[in-house]
Image (cartoon, rainbow, N blue to C red; front, side, top):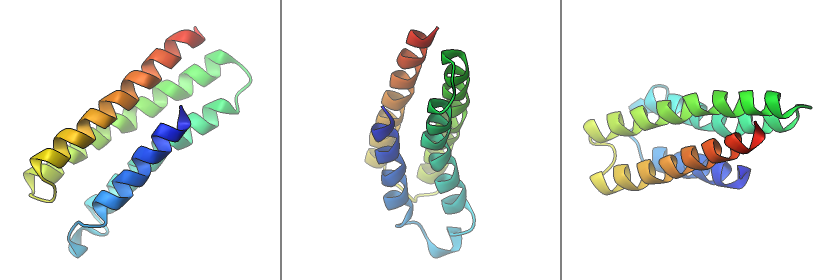
Length: 108
């Protein structure tokens, strides 16, 4: 499961590398930070002893997913990404969210 999240994080890095230089400390920094927190929270959850604790970290990881979605929409609104990029990244992100939610339901 975590490999999909790491791959998505890498894709966000590659996508934001094409953003304007003046966004380096703005949207790019925020985008990257939030995308990193998704696999990081999952990894931290894996280190927990109980399924209940792991489940809590999966829920925490969902928050940054929706932050990324908002940043994708804003990036499209600002003309930094194409409609195709928006649709593709959003589809991948929703797949990640679904995967995490389904896995989390098995921990209860």
